[in-house]
Amino acid sequence: MRAVFATGSAPREPLSVLSVGEVPEGPLEALPSGWARVRVAVAGLNHHDIWTLRGISSRPIAYPAVLGCDAAGWVESYGGSPDGPSEGQPAIGTRVVVHAVVSCGECDGCRRKERCARMALLSEGNLRGTLGERVDVPVANLIPLPSGVSFDAAACLPTAYLTAFHMLFEAGGLRPGQSVLIHGGHGGVAVAARTLAALCGAHVIVTSRTEAHLPSTGGGAELSGGGLLPPADGVVLDGDAVGKIFALTGGRGIDLVVETVGDATWELSLKVVRTGGSIVVSGATTGSNPGAGLNRIFWKEIRVQGVTMGSLAQLETLVQLVAEHRLNPLVAGRFQMEDAAGAFACLLEGRQPGKVLVEVAPGEAGL
Image (cartoon, rainbow, N blue to C red; front, side, top):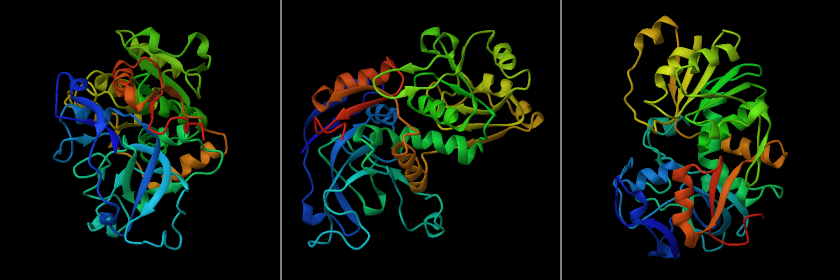
């Protein structure tokens, strides 16, 4: 099958090992019971894919490594069942979005129906990624799409929007009227968090290194590529950032910080979060070893929690929000699979806010 894959690792120049071409596909008869083969319509890019190109993964990487965690498409076949789906499974041809988290099914967490201790994401280890014509996934990871949810919108959800949802509402306990500080104005999780926090009725403040990546003057909504980016207050990451953030919160400080940047913003996060507030961490794009600032953490009684992805039930909630026209994920750009290099360059450069999508089956994105 045709796919986008890494031919090796390149820590300094990740796009140099990016390739598009044919890769071997496992025979259908080898697909185990409890698994489904999905024909991919649209796949979404994430910085997780950049880490894979750099050679960094939670599992040993086997090359060629098909990239991608996010996908929406159609159920093509089921493993171990020549007669088609079992009772309760989506029919062949059903439009679905794929949950990217694959659990082991055996650890204590899985037995308690909690977080798997050995979870992996699609594209890690021996799991094929979604940037190919087909992807094999556990049947339990399939969520049928309502007729009003496009493949484009669905492909935005499984990583960035799911992580943001988990950070804000499960880990952060966000409530209407509270303040949220989101670092990195154009990042996938940052844009998703901004959108979902605004939907909740929170006061959203966005930081960025440059004025260009901040909300437009006056807090007006922005439209880019598809989907609406809600208004927010913006603060440049400079020497006056702390004072500006306290001024925007009436001197109280931030209720919840969405931290995905790491070294470059950690000290600021500790300074501006209110006493008894929360910092939820899901990434560290500028480095993962900042000064801990333990004195601020214990003195201000700050809650710090890490988040990786989210649950199937949370992804189902996001799909329903899209179906109800309450959530319209922002798309930064759409690319054909043959222009994967352009798609990854768009992701790396952060040209536009929102998700970068790859149309694996051209012409099907809007369905």
